[in-house]
Length: 207
Image 1 (cartoon, rainbow, N blue to C red):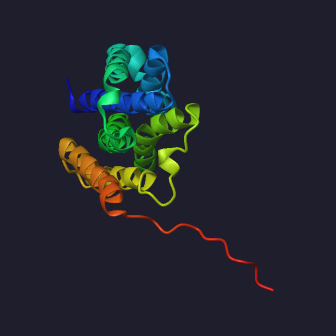
Image 2 (cartoon, rainbow, N blue to C red; image 1 turned 90 degrees about the horizontal axis):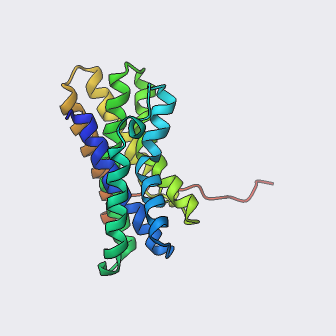
């Protein structure tokens, strides 16, 4: 198995765990767990493949991705009650999934010869849209839009770093590892140290 499919498998598994944790917060049944877990797991990669015009969406070509997501979701159904804080676990699962999904998106786009700007966008889309779909369906405030948090910013910075490394002819595995490291470092810094971007604050109009 190549590096990019391995990243896709890892992202599917971890995002399925995070999706199932959201399903547990919504108190869904086991079918709901599988649906939300699978939606989270393949949502970003599906959008990526459709936009890039791949011959087949990755999980259609290899249904093992959906099977893996379903197994992960069922596992969470029986174990979520053991977690002291499901929301804290959700945020860290999301951080780990982001750090593998973004380089997976970058790697797929690079393999198809996409323009560097498109490569960065595909990295962000792969990392962010599954979680966005999950939170919208479950009626939660999307983590990707939490005020000031480094989520989309982390994905963008990681994708840009990996794309730049590829443009200066760094070996692809090293470029993707750099992408993952930058993404995770920024997201983890936001969770641990409160790193934030300044938020817009409304001001009264001038007379």
